[in-house]
Length: 194
Image (cartoon, rainbow, N blue to C red; front, side):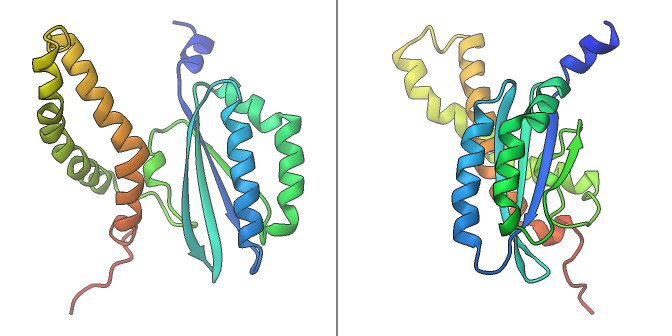
């Protein structure tokens, strides 16, 4: 496989951090809904997660966008639509538009600030804790459908449905919640007991 074909098959992640000026939160939320909708129409867009937090006393919005390849991401970053939308948002932002591109699939574990990436073992532990209950529960939830329609209960269709359910729930619901809930542990900011 040549280099450009390998790059084209590589999912990329764009992390955008915006600290919002005090009193501009509602205007920013409206702007954010609009740009997320526009980005979702962009070629190769695979989804977006938004994590809300606080940084330096101001609301911090960390948006993690996934694209199917570097070319599609570059197309979005260079698009006239995005440039116009960022210009609209500038009066709302304390520090401007902070972006970072990564080809790693660590998008759940993006630090909220300038902190370093959580250790891999912590990422693995949290991923295990989120996926294990789902892998035990999903087959049981699908069982009535497999009994009703035996063709869906065959090896390939049943495993496809179960795996798809787990992946969608992990990516869109449980992992964003878990990373927010365990953020202090992931980033090593929990207090040591004496």
